[in-house]
Length: 214
Image (cartoon, rainbow, N blue to C red; front, side):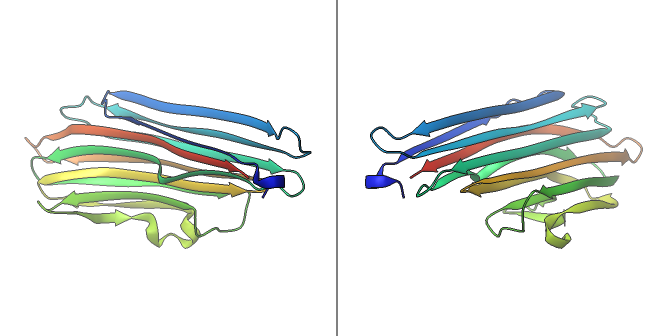
């Protein structure tokens, strides 16, 4: 807590549902605060971004490549709490598609956590999910990756149906810390003759950031 319970707090949320063959979203935030009348100061920085590219067109794509990162930095003087959070939902990217027939695929990429010990409040996750008409279930998820980091490479055959590629980065920093989460992946299809894989709709939910200086 700052002297006499001085506090500064912000909440920011941004969402986009625009789907393009190539898309990106990013944001930066910086603030240094010095309490009036008391000798304390704190600073927070955030750089949050993701991007994707579709090869082969939206109506019959061959591959989707995507990447994202969340970088947070906090600093605080004596008797000050400085916090920056990108959580609930954090930095998320959803890409929805429909397979009209059995479709072979590969799904590979990498997850990174850098600059700190594992924090249960942080999360990196990539998932290929199928919609059964009621709920989305995982065809493959990186939740089994040790500590949520490292490379993965999987593949198989998708039955006809609705699918999505889901990625999330959720991060937080306290006091004086620098933290980074990142992901990248490539999803490729090898359709059977006369099949169609259509990227039907996309949603980029970019940021929920919260900083608290108290």
